[in-house]
Every structure is written in C-alpha cells, then in structure tokens.
Image 1 (cartoon, one colour):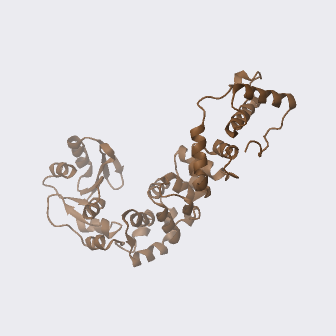
Image 2 (cartoon, helix red, strand yellow):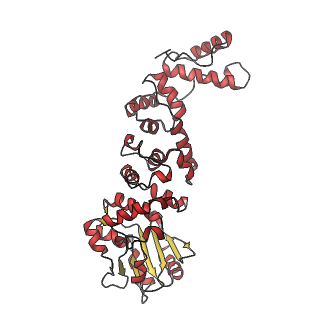
Image 3 (spheres, rainbow, N blue to C red):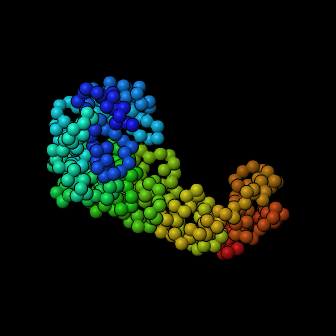
Amino acid sequence: MAEQALRTVLAGEEAYLVGGVVRDELLGRPVLDVDVACHEPERAALDYRRTAGGAVFPLSERHGAWRVALPGGRTVDFTRLAGTIEADLAGRDFTINAIAVPLAGGEAVDPHGGRQDVTARLVRAVSERVFRDDPLRLLRAVRLEDELGFRLEAGTEELVRRDAALVTAPAGERILSELLRLTGSGYARLAELRLLAPLGGSSGRLDHLPGTASPELRLVAALGQAVDRLPVSNETRRLARTLLSARRPADASRREIHRFRRSTEPWALDALAFLGAPELADAVLAARAADAPEPLVRGDELGLPPGPEVGRLLERIAEERAAGTIRTREEALALVRRETAAGAPRTSDPGCGR
C-alpha cells in the first residue's frame, strides 16, 4: 500500500527506496518504516500525506528531511537526493543500509555489496569514517547486531573499538532511543566493545534480569545512576530511584515482604530481579493477591489530631495486618490504644509475627 502510493506521488521522478526498508524486505521482516530518497522531499511528503493520510512534519532542516507518521506507528521518511544515488549511498552507515531500489522499477543500486552482507548476516561499515561522521552509529552497529542476529565484520569491529570514546558525543535523545531497543545481550556487547563504560554503565546487573525484562528495567540495570544523564521520562526516573534504593528482603516472611513492597511497588518484582532475588517473587505475588480492598480503619477514626503520628499508626496497622497479627477493626484500634498509651517505639520488632 505504501509503495503503491509512493509510486503515484513520485511518478516520473527519480526516487528510491533506501536503507532499512530494503534490508528488511530482503530479510523477510515486517516493514514499518519506509525511507525514500528524492529531489524534493518536502513537496513529496505533503503530496503523500494528501494521498495516504497521517501527519507530516520536518525531521531535519539541515538535511531537508520530512516524515509522514501513519496510523499503527508506521512512518514514511523523505530525504533529499542532492546528487547521484551512488553518492547518497556512500554517505550512509553500513552496507546493509546502503542499498537503493528505484521506485519506478529496475535493478537495485548496491555499490558496496550490501546484499551479500545481508546474506552473510554482517554489519559492515561503508567507510572507515562512519563513526567519526556520526558517533551514534557506534550504538546503532551493536543494535543492528542485536536486533537482526547479525555480527560485526572484523574490520568494522576494529573501527568501533578505535572510536569508542566518541560514544557520548550524540544528543541524549538519540542515545536513549538506541539503548531502549537493546536486549540484555546487546548491553553485554556494548560492554565488550568498551562502549558502555563511557556512558556510565556496566553489565554486572544484567545477568540477573529475565528475558522478559522491560526496556526501562534493562536501561536502569545497565546504567544505574547514569540514567539521570539521559532525557528519560519521569516514570523511568522514579523506577531508577526505586530500584537503586531497594534493599533485598531478609527473608520471605509476610512482614519482610510487606516492608519491601512498601518501598518498591509498583515495581517490586522488577526490584527483586534487579537485586538478584527472583526466588522471592512468589512471596510478592502472594502478598499482592492477599491485599485487602479496604483498610481496617481510617485516619479520622483513630481519635488523634491530624499529623505524622496518624500516618505512622496507619502504617503499623497495615504491617501487622500483612504479618497476620491483627485481622479486625477492633484489633487495629486496640493496637492504636496500646501504642499511644505506652509511648511505643516507632518501629515494630522485626521478629514479631513472622
């Protein structure tokens, strides 16, 4: 559907499908993002939007690139073809992304042997300057290995190691976009190629994570405090603070699990994986299932003036309820009377109610 509309919009003009769309079609992978090289990208994008719908906006004023965002997360990018297609491809990153197919039909333009490298499942640099021209390509090389199941060609790996110190140069938004697409193996590969340490990360915690870990959990596990150097969402910042301050429960008792959940929910299971304590996951799941829909008492039922003491007592009630030492409203109020009458200590005996 996308290619048919593109042929209509760009009929009679020199235009090519380039980059990932050609590579993914050769691999039989689903194509979500289409890249088109043409002489008038702005006009082509506006015409395509009128034909196919979606939203149109400029991607790069410097390079004259425009994007049409379609429903379902699909995109069509139009980039300027300033000279010959061969010159355009010579400026791209890897041979597997330097193949062009004429929209009007005909043979693919493949001056760097990209189709052979697709078959051989290699990520090979188009030139020895690719990483110096755009250091983000250091991360992209690893991401392509990771995402496609390819491997770096030996000479390209040498170039990555040579230019590894440049990995911090790109804008944080661009770095973050690449990192969030990596699996745990991808982060381990970054560490192996000396790309992770300059970003403030290490691979030590990655072995603890399950294969189902979210991209955000992998990011925090790999970067730790260095997550704050990137423009992550507020939700990811809260996740990072929670995981980095989490402490492993002493045991699987209901009291310990309650205290752990109080400091880590809604990410208690992620925190266990982060801490290398997955054996306690069943205890957390059981505690979640046992959560009561309503508290035994409310703050205004304690007979105390509003203030921190009310919050402390409500938490004491919640903990004792989770530990199984109290079950009813009357028992909760009796606990409050004992605490207020005797001037009880601020924290309960950790051994009580296990």
